[in-house]
Each structure stands twice: as C-alpha cells, then as structure tokens.
Image (tube, rainbow, N blue to C red; front, side):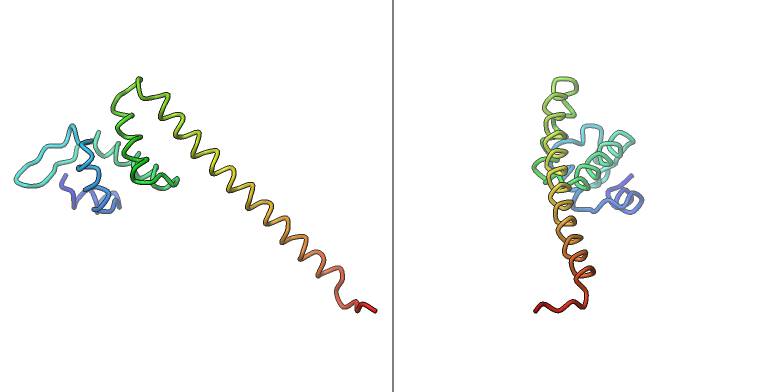
Length: 120
C-alpha cells in the first residue's frame, strides 16, 4: 500500500507517515518505484503512533517510544515509565478540572440560593 493509500484508508495524515519513514521505523517497508509500500506490521505500528498522538505524546516522545518498541523486551521498562508519566499527568489535569467544576458549582449554588435577596 502506498503512502497515499495508507493515509486515505486509515485517516493518517501524510505528515505522520513521512515522520514515521524518517525515523527509520519502516523496517518492513519497501520502496517500490519511488514510493513506500506499507505492510500489516507497518500499519500496526502506525496505529500505535496515532494512539500515542491522541493521548498527548509529542513527536519526540512518539519517536522515542517507537524506537523502544522496536527494541522488544529491553525497551519495555522505559516505555512503561513513559506511559505512567503521561497517565499521571492526565490524572493531574483531571483533578484540576474537577476542582474547577467544584468551584463553578459552588458559585452557581450561591447564586441560586441567594436569589433575589437584597443585602441591607
């Protein structure tokens, strides 16, 4: 499958496919008549890349993660640390947003319950 076919079929931006190629992660990809050919293992790795982007990894983090993935078991601990770090950061964001919601709800409650009361 060409880069354009992969992009269209799997809704992967061409830019991400080009980055993937530039990272040297295309071990199974063959260049045929000037265009890359993606096989099933490449598409699986691209799915992982899209997931990493979706959960907030930067391009640098994605590249590091994918290179560790290709190392097999020797890269597992570091990949797990990366995922744990991202998870903890996401939890921190969620907890911050929960505190914001609590404050908003408090203000709404105060408005509803003090209603038309005028202070003297």
